[in-house]
Length: 162
Image (cartoon, rainbow, N blue to C red; front, side, top):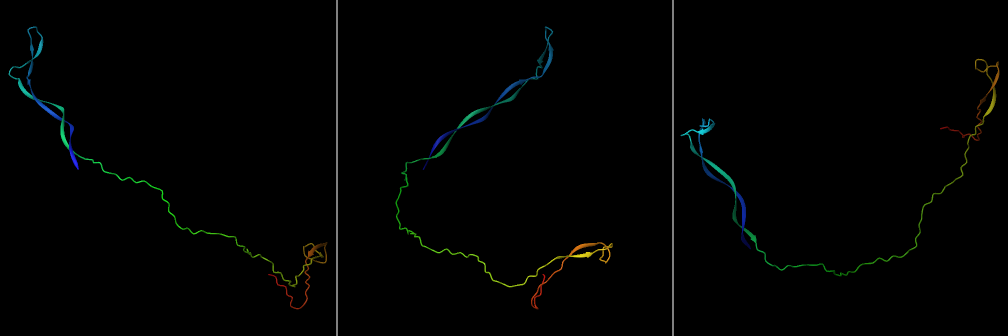
C-alpha cells in the first residue's frame, strides 16, 4: 500500500513593481553668480511609469506517494552436502600372452643361365698420309680400333640392344 507525504519544492518567480518618476525637459540657465546650469523647463515635467523587476525565491508544497514497507518473513536456503550412492561396474584387467607377427622382406633367388657378350679392344697400326686419309704412303700412326669379338654358341643367340 502507499501513503503520501508533503515535500517542498524550491523555485524562483519574477516580481515587478511600477514606480513613477518625474521626467522634464532641460535648458541652460545662467545663475546670479554667472554660472550656467541645466534647469527644468516649467510645464514640461511628467510622471512616467517605470517597472522595477527582480527574481524572488518561492516554495510550493507537493504531495508525494511512497511505498509502505512491512516486515515479511523471508526464506533463506543453504546448500547442505548429501551422499548419493550407486552401483558402478568395475573393469579388471589381466595380462594375456600374444604373438606379434610382422612380414619381413626376403630375397627370392633363382639360378638363371644366360650369355653376356664381352667387348674386347686391341691396338691395330694404321697409316695416315698428308691429307688425313689412309694411304700406302706417309708416316705411320697408331689409332685404336675397336674390334668386337662375339662368342656365341647355338643358332638363336641373337643380341638385342635397347
